[in-house]
Length: 228
Image (cartoon, rainbow, N blue to C red):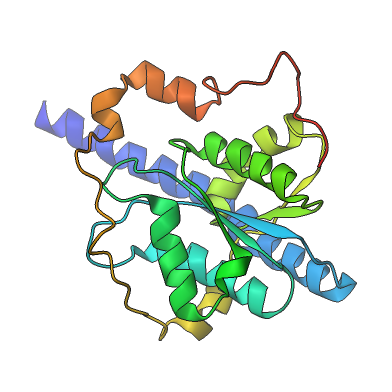
């Protein structure tokens, strides 16, 4: 039995590595190509949507750091004029959007250009509720700033459910190496949620899958949210 389990595990790892290698174009080369296109054409956007990631109460995770620094990079270049950080208290007792916002402020992004979406519990909700904020603020052009894998997973959703095009501009790991030394400190003393119940204790597996697919969102009977 142990041998069978071990073989199955290795088979799974091999398949996983193969799939990852096959999508290398989408996780590495395509983001670089898209970024070069944006820069060469002088494209700019009213706002960037940055999905959240759990905070452990001590320091930002490498994925949260990458997403925030990528948004910072785009803001510094003038590619994005505003940033919408999205995410509620999902897996840890901290509102993800607020934590990311603190890091952005510490990096020097003006508070007037930071917006917070704090309802989202799933990635599709990050997009939906941030799009709503963009509507309220009068933003007309938006871009999704996240990691390449999440960008791939959300591409179909962003293409099919919104009248205004949500441009995908996932981060480029090589570019972020220029910012590795940036590790600002933030004060989270009053940021902890209490009482707090993590998502996996509030939702069943099926409910979580449904939420990830956007099943909890109110589309008002429409197939797409209207244009910005």
